[in-house]
Structures are given as structure tokens and as C-alpha cells.
Image (cartoon, rainbow, N blue to C red):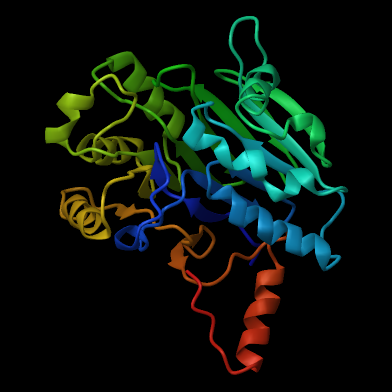
Length: 319
């Protein structure tokens, strides 16, 4: 069977990292999700979680297994710090011989490149983009764009409902699709909800943020986020194959997130609802979650590590 899309969560927190012992099951790093397939890899957002992904990709290159034609395609939803801070030290940006394609929203009179460079520059950060070693290509994204990637992959863009300009993405390959929908407030705008339903219609996986429950939401209305009850309803209306809720509120403990997850799973929708955990890999081909290391052209050395560990008498416990 031909390999399909493999999705991995490298960071699942929102607003701020949460490096605390009672939050490690769901993870402490901020937003980063990768999707890979035999011909390439796309990364959505560059929160602190992208650091570990960068280490893995750098290791691939060090073993001489990196295909030169592979660029790392990074799609940034918006420029709030929790979604870009990991890019400031992303290992692949400082690795000669690697190519990074950066996509993100522009604003009137200012490109995505200009907006990003303002953040990664003095006096806010000691190292600038001018000091990176990789070949970097910049792309402005806007509502209704379609980006074509190697391996018959298309990435569609839709304007989100979030302060300071934000977009959401839909990655499609043949009959498989993933919607990366952080950060997005569904609110009461019927026209926006209609557009969202059409954009995410029939996706295999819907990734959405829902840091609140319905009772908490009133205090945070207008912040640009949704509550899990309306997110589950949207997944149902979109006919999504599964729903992964991410961008967890940084102060939530594992116990609190488990309670919210159980409440979401007890609802009427018969789809699969999961509160994303850092390190989780989902293979859309196999249509089930796996604890194994991510396969695919870009991360394949993980399989070698797995074999080496077994040969050495150690089983991999990576999630």
C-alpha cells in the first residue's frame, strides 16, 4: 500500500510554554505540527516544539540521508510569539545545505518577511535572519491561496478569526487531508462559520484550538479562541474523520485536560475526539494513532533507531 500522510504533534500548548511536571503527558511546548509524505514535509507553526523536529531533521542530514531536493516547508499561521519563537533557534536554519521555505500572512504594505524580521532582530533577539546558513525562501500567504508542493500536495489558505492577522491551512494529498486550524474563534459570525465548514469539509483530520470550556469562554470572548463544545459541533458539521484539539491553555494540568477530553468524548458526535499530546504520531493511511517514530522520507532514520534499540535489547518508549 502506498504511504500516505503522517501527522506528528511537536508542540501542543498555547500562549506560553509549560515546562512543569504535572503537564508532561500532554506536553509543555508551544504549537508545532508536522505532516510528512514520501516526497516531502510540511510544518505548521514554529513554536518551541519545532526545536526537537529540527534536531531530528539535522540528524537525518548528518547521516547522509537527506535528499537535496527536499525543502522544509514551514507554514506560519500568525506572528504571535508562541507560534514563532522556536524558529529563532530552529536548527535547520543554521545548517548549511538545507533549504527552508517560509510561508506566512502579510499585511497592507508589509510582507511576511519584513514582519518576521522585525521580531527576530535587535533589540528583541541577538541573532538575526541574516546570520542563518540555510537557503531561505519567503512567501506571503493570503486568503484563498493554493500552494503546490512535491508529491501531489496542495496547501490551501483561509483567513482566520484571530487578532493581528492569522490564517488556517488545509493540506491535501490525493484523497487525504489535514486542516490545521489554530488560532480561530468561531464566535457567532454565521458567514465565517459557513466558510469554515466549507473549507474543512470532509477532512480526514481537523486540528483545532479550544483552550476553554463553554462556561469560561464568556470571559475570553474576542481573544481569538474557541471552546471545545463548539469545536466538536463544528467537526461534526464538517464531517471530519477525527478531531484533535490542541493549543492547550498553558496552566492546565494533565488531570484537567484528561477531564475535558473525557467530557468531549462523551458527547453525541460519533467521531474520534482527542486532546493532542506532544509526540503523538497519526498515520492517516492506517487510520490509527501510533506510538512509533514517524515514518516518511524526511524522518526515516527513526526507523533505524528503532531497529538498533531492539537489537541492543531496548524497546523504544517514544510517543
